[in-house]
Every structure is written in structure tokens, then in C-alpha cells.
Image 1 (cartoon, rainbow, N blue to C red):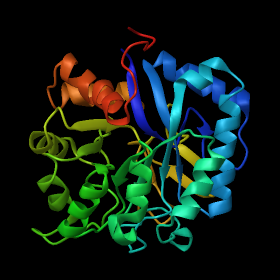
Image 2: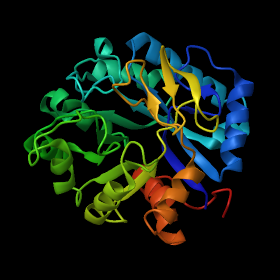
Image 3: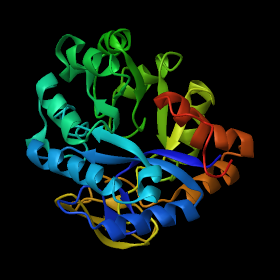
Length: 310
């Protein structure tokens, strides 16, 4: 059973948020993912102008139809935004001018553009009035995940009651300085017995000792590991694109906005993340596979049988 990465903005020089995608480049990226032991991913489209997001979703769906390897590797799409918090820090590197209030009609237009491939949506519960969009998505079997959010505990619980079932990259998409007790990290951890907790295991977004603490609370059966990779993943340091913004990757593979204020995805590959889990957290191979494959498959209802490495 190979890895299943639920959050890939791009990799190996390919940006899934580009306005135009080259089928040959996408196929090569998928071949490289397979070489890394990654059986499946959710290609991730982040906040931008709604029409651009719809076009990018349509691009992925269209290219997926051109090649069987691409279709098998890109098992679906993760839509991260635009229904997130607009507040500084919580919005992260997402363009705040394109953040929108949660809207069923706007979401439906994205679902249509993606031709049924959307499996996972990250939104801010406080931006979803009466949890209308959460209920709409959950009723269709789409995972609704809190992220880029400063939701109160009451808002998180209301989301869970409406179908919210995950939290996207815990410990990220929040300001550097938070209340020491009442903050979004503590709120999310307090309900981790009811939702799945997503974590980036690059040692940059969340230091490995913090990751260890998060896992101890959430539990190995409730957490899942993603790369949150951008086009830089597998290509080292340099300047790369994520949608319309430039990303600067330093020698430690930290991925920065131009002002160095926010991280923008990651430049890690899944084998490197696995190495961190093994060497810095001391996890066993079965525990690692649970975090990088089994839990992800279970969360989105993807069958275990038929994975290419089984």
C-alpha cells in the first residue's frame, strides 16, 4: 500500500494552480510521485479569483482524462478556500482580496467545474453561516475540513455537528503570536477525538517536537500526514510559482512569500516526510503507513484494495 497525500498544490516543477497545465508535465510529475512511493494524491487548488479557481479545477479534470496513470494518481481534488478567514495570519498566504463568504451556489459552480472530482474542502467554520455549506458538502460525501480559521470552540462544534470531519494542517495558517490558552490550536486539539487532524511533517511548518506533541494528543488513529507540496517539491531551493504568486524556497527548503512573512505550502516530498517521522519521532513503519496512507484513505472513503504497491 503506497502513500496517499491529501494536499498537493504541485510538485516536481508542476503547479496545479497554474492557469494552464501541460499534460506531459503533469504525467511526468505523476511518474515521479509513483517513484517516490506515492500511489495517490488530491491535487489542491487554493484561494484565488473564483473564475480562475473554476478554470484550474476544470484543467485538472480535463488532463486527468488524457492518461490512465494521471487518472489513477490524481484520485481527486482538494479545494482549499476561498471560504476561509480573511483575518491577517489566519488567511496565511492566500490572497485576502479573493476570500469569499461561504456560498452554496459558488461551491456548486466549483464542483461542476471539477466534474465530480472534489473530495475535500477546507473552509473556516466562522465563515459558514449556520453551517449551510458544511451540511451541503457533507451530504455529498465530501470531506469538510476546518482550516485557515479562528473559529471559536462553539463554532467548531457546530461545524462537527453539521458534518465537519477534519482540520487542515494544524499549527499553520495562524498568527505567530496567539493567546497562550484560548487559541485555534488548543481548540482543535480539544475535539481531536471527533475529527481527523492533518499535519505537515516537514519540520518547518511544525517543528518535529511539536508534531510529536500533536500526535500524542490526536492519536495515531486520528491523524494524517500531508506534504502540502508546491511545484518546488523535489526541485530544491529557488524561485517557484503557486498560482499568481512567487514563492522563494531557501536552502532549508522553507517556502516563503516575498516579504518572508508567511510560508507558502512546502517543498518536501513524501519520502522526506517519512524520514522525519522515522528518525525524529521514532515511529515504526506500520505507524508511518497509518499516518501517510491508511488514515487518509479512510477519511475520504477511498478503498484500500487495489493500491499499486499492494
